[in-house]
Image 1 (spheres, rainbow, N blue to C red):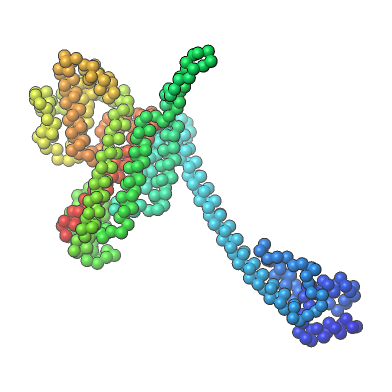
Image 2 (image 1 turned 120 degrees about the vertical axis):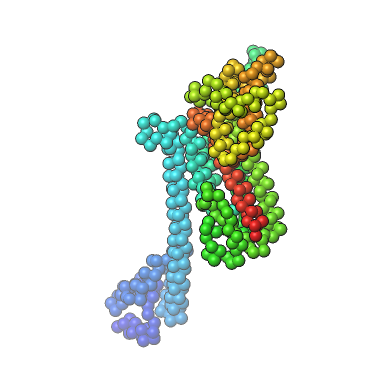
Amino acid sequence: MDNLSNTDENYDLGYQPSPCSTEHNDQSTTETPGYSTMSGDSFLYCRTYSGTSAISEPVDDQSCCSEASPSHCPARRSGGQKLAVLTRLGTKQCKSNVDEKLDELDSLDLELEMMKERFSKLLLGEDMSGSGKGVCTAVTISNAITNLYATVFGQNLRLEPLNPEKKALWKREMDCLLSVCDYIVEFSPTKSQDLRNGTAVEIMESRPRSDIYINLPALRKLDAMLIEILDSFQDREFWYAEQGSMSSNSSRTGSFRRVVQRNDEKWWVPVPCIPPSGLSEKTRKHLRHKRECANQIHKAAMSINSSVLSEMEIPDSYMASLPKSGRASIGDAIYRFMYSAEKFSPEYLLDCLNIASEHEALELADRVEASMYTWRRKAGISHSKSSWSMMKDLMSDVDRNDKNHILAERAETLLFALKQRYPELSQTSLDTCKIQYNRDVGQAILESYSRVLEGLAFNIVAWIDDVFFVDSSA
């Protein structure tokens, strides 16, 4: 009864027994018929404690109060509330960390699946049936680089930084495709070593193939420079409007709106717009500098591409398709000028031809190239560039005066002058045939990489010229 009266007094004072006092009373007194440890308040506290995170400390049974004290037990309850707040914060932090890790895992899984798809296509030769009817590895990699360029830069028709996602895609995919070159090596003797029996042996060491060792780092540098040129147009004074749109539809006011007359074949290219007062001198200087850089990059990439193409073997199918006479290939007028002139001037000949379009220039390049190899074949010279160069050094004066040899040399200089005058000229029939039948993986990578960089550099120069043209018209 005393215990019951004490309990009633505590409740009258506003005190409610805590779990710690309950446990202590249960241990010290076995008869407590008027109290249950699973009361409403004690159950609420137990649920709060069970939900705490790892940062909360467990309650020590020995630290519980031995007497019912109104001054101590409310303090324990406030501490429980603080632990509950920390619990919720800790749970949110853990949840956010878990979500971030899951997102990272998802992105890694996505990239892994993309890489599996890429290498599967490379191994299958773009033949998804797996029947072995696909193209060779060299052509597959060449197509992969070309398609990647179209995906990343195909819609980028302005002087502006590349989208971060596309920039990351370009870097990641190119690093993957170019990694093949790390395993294309050649063996060369580095030093000799004497064995115990006195025999001298040469030690062979692997190193990157010479063409890859020279050209690939240069192409990577050109690639980075082109991306840097695009990034330099983050803050610019000019902007773009779609072809045919009015200045009122632009996000800026005061367009020059002197409609720029663009060729019909470039109707999809957006039109640059400038302020009414024109570009500032600082912007003009920046554009001139970047144009010169892009022009030099274009020349370097074109030189590498031409060098790689010249070293590729000429397919037998192309040689079989050549006409029997070089004169029939280039026509009587050009043939007479090339053969009769004592001092052949390819520039003068091109001026006389009055080439009106790129299509005509490409057709002339195909005919001149075909006649060149026809005359080389008649001169008894192998059609590879290296053997042709060596044979020219070994030829006697009598051989050098041979008609076929003279015509072949003049056709080569005419073709070179034609490509210099029309740098945007598409690939000739021979170049396309070489790429199609090429089996050398290293040459395929160098050719396709230099070709896409050459195209990007040429586009940048053209875009800058468009801005200058608009500025001069304002």
